[in-house]
Length: 190
Image (cartoon, rainbow, N blue to C red; front, side, top):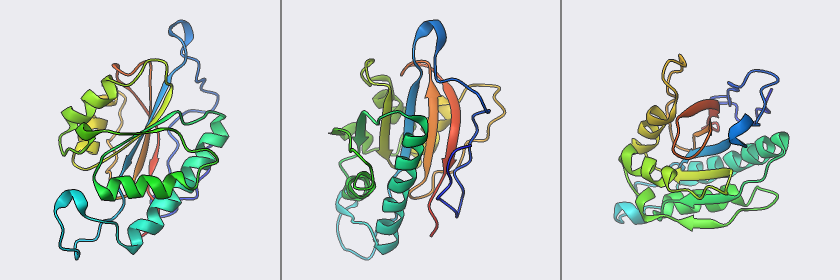
């Protein structure tokens, strides 16, 4: 069972006990951690790309980082890359989350991640380096929910989780071009 410090919408483990991360003959599974940016501050008169986080967003982003640290520690795997939208609210949410990690991964600011279209995010995922196994992708809705719809395997009986602000969803895939399965999801309390 995975740790659960997110208590508003608990991080729900989906992985059955004893499931292996070994992808068998095809090698190690890939882990995509999808994170929606934290709550932004609409009272600041700036364009969409420059909108900052509000107080709640700053709290939630740090809490998401604490959950991520615990999750990664429990699985014994490092986070190898953070792919982050260049929008201020996404970049700052990641900075706050990364500050909670034992070791923050390299960050790639990805222009294509500043999108509201799941196809664009899917293109980002398909372009991830094959030698990287664990990646966090910080983006926006509805693109995050649309990406989850595209990535989850058909017939798995899974309902795509809502990606509210600061929500996290963990998906395991055979490779960055395949569909996968939901391992955990949730979000910090308000």
